[in-house]
Amino acid sequence: PDTGRVRASIAQHYDNIHYMDSQVARILNALEEDHLDGSTVVIWTTDHGDAFPRAKRAVYESGTRVPLIMRFPSREYAGEANGSLVSFVDLAPTILRLAGGEAPNFIQGRDMLAGAEREYIFSARDRMDATFDRVRAVRDSRYRLIENFAPKLEYFRPLLFRDMFPIMQELWRVSKEDSTDASYSQYFTAPRPRYELYDLESDPHEIENLAGDSRLAAVEQRLVAALNGWRQRVG
Image (tube, rainbow, N blue to C red; front, side):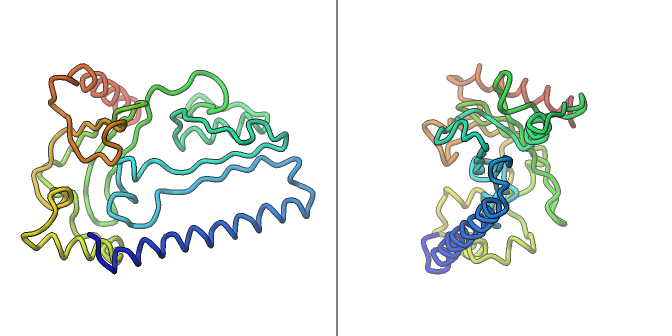
């Protein structure tokens, strides 16, 4: 909702990012002062943000796409942007290889700097503090498929930590009004669809659910098969 409380909360988030940047600068300066910058690989990433409604604990793009920057002593790849699909599980094998080691067979991830690129990345949403949910998702270079295993439950239900934030409080307030915008009122009602399918190219905010669209039947079947295969491997 476009209200003063929502705008102030988003502005505070950007202030936090600005402060975080200054902390990163202090760390990088310390590496230089200790003459370690020439032998240190710097990996900078984040978690999925503050408790904004579709960020933390969400398997949408707004909750799973996070920054990732790597700096090598040799300055290799400097200034380049890589659009490959990567997952946090890829960090361990990548770091092990950079350190001269080998990843054990039980590690799920792959070295993000070597070998074949990922075709899919997977994500999950389960119990959040005391609030239950069970969701699995798969994304390829263009589409995201989400499977809701508890469709009889609303997407947004009381959650103490998240409900302390002004944006969530505003959403709860307007959800009780008849004028609630349909684009977010759906998150307070049940049932949810069993499957959600989004075209991230034409619908980057994942508003229009295309699951069941005959034009994308082959895409949906392929992503369902990929998701089922991943669930069989890792649960």
